[in-house]
Length: 186
Image (cartoon, rainbow, N blue to C red; front, side, top):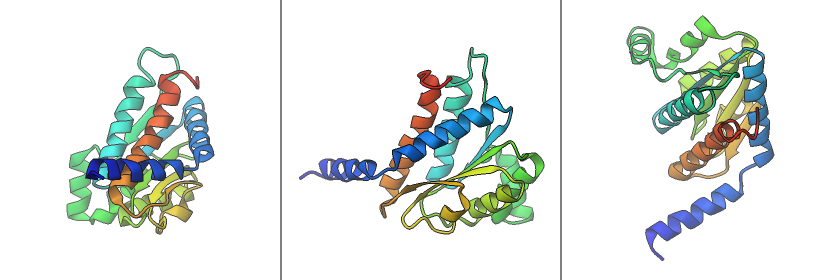
């Protein structure tokens, strides 16, 4: 069996293990947050930072452009000057929580993505979000780490392989965005 076939076979098994009713719940929370005038804040590191930046773009353009209902959504990963200022002057574990301290309100939704579930800055962001209190969604892999119990909703990928975890996270994020882009949810 080729590596590509093996990878795809393992990915298909991973995708079959996802809890799709939880994805539907996440879609509903995105809708409720938008309709209440709340904001959605997302954070993650490495590949997860790229995933939250990607989905923020999809939602800003694909789910809001030329529509009456618009999302207020921010990837906390995208302000490089702010991130490096906090990382340099305070510590990398503070780069997301300090942004949330400036913006988060009780009608907001905070989404944290971490394959390991143990990224200190992502964990700290959800810990703070719960005190606001914001609704929280955790996207986790492996055993869920410290992040899993901090999510009011945990979209867990029961897998050890980081590539397949990130693939599944991106697919679930796309499911959320495309529910609005394809007008399955208004």
